[in-house]
Image (cartoon, rainbow, N blue to C red):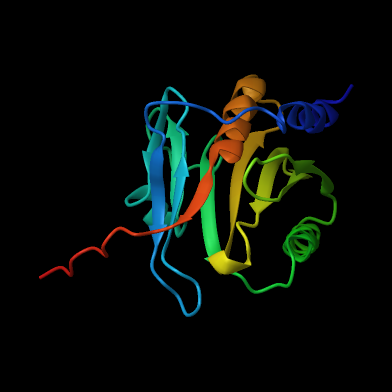
Length: 193
């Protein structure tokens, strides 16, 4: 069985894992009110040995939050990435299809497979991208509901021969199914003087 097929099968097996629990089970990222979308917060449990970052490396690369192990390397492999954006397309399926189309335009030799993720609080759908560059990407789009005004995604890239991929995928799927969107009641940060 090819390693790439194994990746897809492993993700399917872990798509229904129970939410992770941990001492860092709190807010990972926040967003301000934007038009009709209320201010929001995303909480997620952090697996043991992972570092949470919303405000240093995440901002530097233009995302809402990252989780990584060890020292920050700046490489995309083995980094869990959270993105939250205002709803633009009509459905979650439209978001997934648009992303798959962009991926295949960028890498016509790449392969894409997908599966539903059984998130306990919102619909989610995963894509596995097998790149001609021998880097595989897992991307999970989630829809916290029309009232949220946003959609979110979790992603992670792996070298296709990474010997730690199973443990990394386990941690990734636990974070995905444990993530929660909520209206943010926290006061906005004070302006810098």
